Length: 296
Image (cartoon, rainbow, N blue to C red):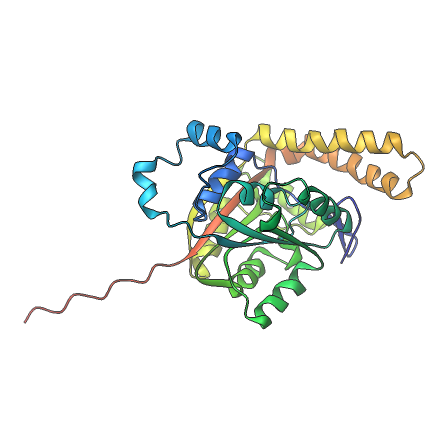
């Protein structure tokens, strides 16, 4: 598996790219759902998100906060967007790994300007090998993420198994995955995506069955709206247009431009209707309390 500087990964003859069309407010929710404690001096954007979403009413949640900094592993971290958002707004120490040299370079460049520069760390490398090394070293995390990059491990199930090995006993994992919207023609679209991209799309209920079969509990779902998807795709169109215009002789940019044109047509044609996006928060099943003694 090789990565170009645009964040695309070649697997066989298919190209996969990281996905995460989740809005910032929803990513804030995700941090809370993963058990992270908000900082008292969080940036204004975070405080506004709290007010708008009503997520952190102090009277209800404050007693559960203990000032603990929790460790976060982000596999397929890209430019470190989630890592910085959480490290700057929550009591979280975030470690990210990504195979794209360009993505990691941008993540490290941003580190110099971050108010949480000492709470983030990034490594260039293959995520699957990196996780195996962490397991061998006995390193464990409170939270493990793989958002839009389950192809690193090969499937949703394999991602769950890999992340589970590097979690603490009560650790939480969050996995972002493309889902199949069940409108007319969904089954045909799923077959087309599997044949052309090697992408196996499943409905929300099918993914829930997988989670429960693997002995985990789904405790939270952060989804993306059609507007989130359009914004996410459109920003990529704009960035690529500007780069290609400024570097007309760049062969890699030209190849990327060709892939993007095909992806644009496919997105506006069918993906926009049939593809959804969810981040699933998974926790170990709670231990059942001991049964009461039988009456004498």
